[in-house]
Amino acid sequence: MAAPLHATAAVTAGSPCKKIASTTIAGGKKFTCIKVGKKLVWNKGVLQKASTKPTPTPTTQKLDFPISPEIQKLDQLVQQAFSAAKPAEANIDIQVGPGKESAQIAEIAKESLNSALLMASILKIKLVTPLTVYIGNRDWLTPKMPAGTWCADPMIGVPGPAGGGFCGLSTRVIFLSVDGLMENDGKKISRDFTKTPDRLFISFGFVHELLHAMQGEASMQYAQYKGNYNPYWLNEGGANFGAMMSQAYLYKIPFSQIRVYIATYSSCVLSQKPTLIKDFIKNTGQPNVCGPYYDGYLWTEYLVASTGDFGAMVDLAKQNEKVGSELTYDPSKPDEFEEKKLALSMKYGYAIDFNTFITNAQAYSDAATLQLRKWLSANNPIYPQTL
Image (cartoon, rainbow, N blue to C red; front, side, top):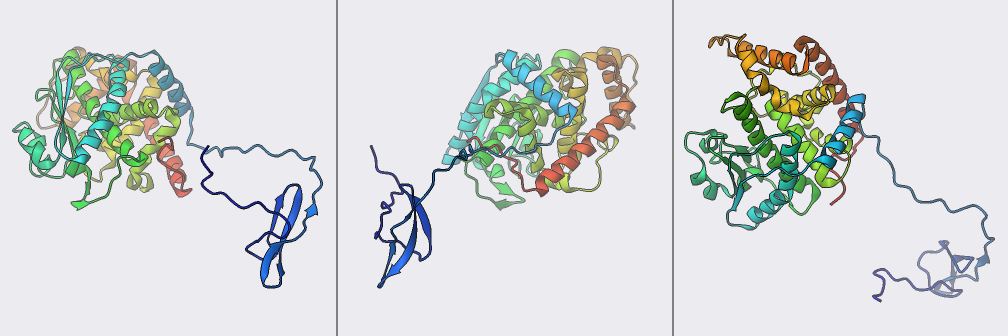
């Protein structure tokens, strides 16, 4: 048997001690450190009476995670969904570029893939389109990006600051950029892919992009539409929600606990100005804009809790034929068209009145933000402590 890492000498009368007047209990006696000549030694000790008070059992402090009836319902729904799901079949080729960071990121992505395929099963999406996932540095990735797509754009794509993305169902390409993931506003940042925060960062982002592919499949399968059926908060907010579900599965902790990861959007949590659904018809991935990603996530939580159906994230496209017969597209009013399309899809798919939904979802988002703000102000963790 190996020796203990921190072995200490036995305490007996006359044995050395380090600090005068300090005390310790050993062998049923209480010893006090005294000075004898120039030495500090333990005294003879005083016999201690046996205590009849039971030794308290150490307990783990229970954190008061933000809670609501909706979150409680989601906790149950997520657990039930994963317990019954089997991974969907898919043709996904992961190609990895040179470098240590590329290999580490690829390892995390591969570990996360099964949870994403379970999400496809839960959403009842068939992944019929083969996908290639490129993981590498900027120079290695750039020539592999489909020309004419945002992924190849030097301002916002791989040659620019992008850390990851889905280039569209017709391109069949997803990428994770080492350089983009290790930069913030153009400045290099340090990451440790063996630690929880950065592993979760990569896993969450990778599954988020695969959710976009699932949204594209839903648009194609249900509406013969090659883009996202609803270019609205459902796109980014829904992808964040699905990615959060997958993290609950990966970390084996309740959804109600993993969801506080959304507080990484700290500027959105701490903002005193509410984000309104009607202000974010277009689901653009602009920096420092809370609507699509943060508030859209909370609106998606409310939508799924209200319907009890995870499919609400993708299958509104099933209403395309019926909705299309009632609407006429006006190119001068694209946002109005998209809002009406979403409103009718909710009405026919789930008997939801859109105006009522807006009011209730906004109230939910505001209340959830207040809870998350209190969570942050109490210095509670936003990363699971399981790795």
